[in-house]
Image (cartoon, rainbow, N blue to C red; front, side, top):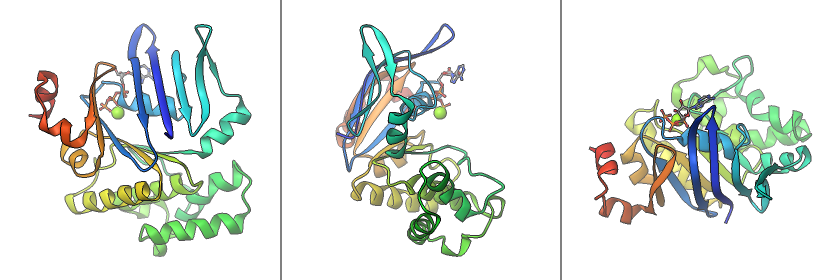
Length: 247
Ligand SMILES: Nc1ncnc2c1ncn2[C@@H]1O[C@H](COP(=O)(O)OP(=O)(O)OP(=O)(O)O)[C@@H](O)[C@H]1O
Ligand SMILES: [Mg+2]
């Protein structure tokens, strides 16, 4: 198991946004979290990537605790431990968050060099390998404004892969893509999983979840309502809350 989330709670002010959320992700598995707007999906991603602090609960990434409950109080990894954890989890934001003033190559090698001290030559070799996989070799010196939505997204995935993470998180990976590009991203996600990454996708796109996920979690109002293998999920859609969302 590469990710374990147990009893996660998070409030903003007095609004509880995550209520006792627990789930697991295995190596090689593709998990899709779906649910209505405001359900708390992005907040989960932000918590497991350490961008938001949880109020309560345990998050364990590749054997290391990002946070854990201890005597009813949450304790977080030290900054040294955090460095180990950050390396093991990649995140692709909905709007990709590329650095606009940096070229494609510079975007990909920035964190390996500056945050992790990897020699420039090594970081560039890895970046070229990833650009090749993403079909973007000829864009290495382009700037984000010169790229299409699908190209920006692939650069963002390449950047998130640069540190060989064990978990890849993607927030709404298909929202800006036409059908052909959606199939391309489905293939890339499947390759990541075959490469022994655990992949966590957040999506409104039911057809995409059905296409690519192995397991599906449906969330509403900060809670997990249903968690199932893809086939069982789509074969048994009796819950009114899920029906409402799907139809
Ligand atoms: N920084 C914040 N401060 C206050 N409230 C927040 C903050 N971030 C999120 N929220 C609230 O938390 C709830 C869950 O937000 P979240 O972004 O996780 O939803 P989501 O499921 O990703 O929705 P969408 O499908 O629209 O992206 C919403 O009610 C949102 O307004
Ligand atoms: Mg969201």
